[in-house]
Figure (cartoon, rainbow over the protein chains, first blue to last red):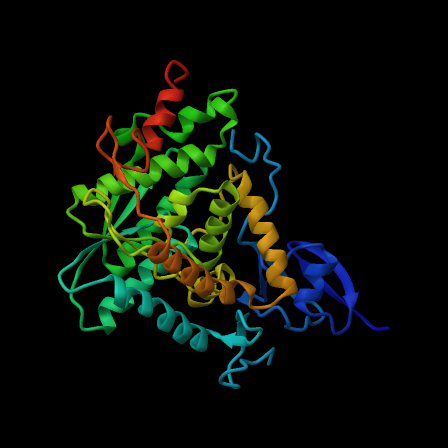
Length: 75
Length: 308
């Protein structure tokens, strides 16, 4: 199997070739409804294939977790 | 070229629509305009003074952009103002800046009001408390007090319509939350176009039929000035409901879009056939719209007496 290297929110990940955005979010255990994938500074659909060296930002558009610390509150 | 648009077949797609189709920026813009204008056409009339509740986040910023476009492209003439309520939360500073910038770009009058001036308390006052009374969440205080402040300010400005950025996801979550709580009164008022009392300024929701993810993609692709941060204090039933509904949307594509028209149909039928009436009065203490004798805002402030 061939692999590609992508950079997700500043971390480098190695994923199989022909990985789509939604596959990446599944690997990262993220609900695709809660995140907007920005690849190479442009929003992309969930079924967009990733390319080697892609700079990916997964922007959280909704909150799914309840763990709020004092630091997160800005205190 | 990356994944192309399923509709026009020529431009790069920016989002997956509710029905699993990939859409480019221009096709998404047409789709958003079509859906939001349908709501605005029924909600806005000639000569209205419309106030947009603008937090500076992606939803309210797009709502302002939609109504701005509607004024530009339709023949309906109405006045437009944007109101931002600073509830005193530390995370809001960037959003207020975004709201100010967007109003400047669109040349819309921007009114910034401090919640403490109207309610006597702010979120920063509440953050100083070790625990909130009756295990309430911050969203209860912030939501209730902000909503009432918006109604007071809109009335003070002489507005007869208030535009909010509630999207498809918000509406479905609220519907199910009211169902879980068994809140018949809230369900009766939910999405009703009737105005039961003159103290309540009617709401218009141009993003009613638009998914939150489509909004985020369009705002990012179009470069509409908006703050993308999420309030770190959000908690409670809404988060659990959101997670459950998002999981349903992933496993059953189009679930959110399909359920809304049915929800509206059920509510309309219940309102006309059953005894579900729009039960709203004015609060005995403050004179603001209320479902009970004393409004929720007064009840919450009474609970805080002696603590702040």
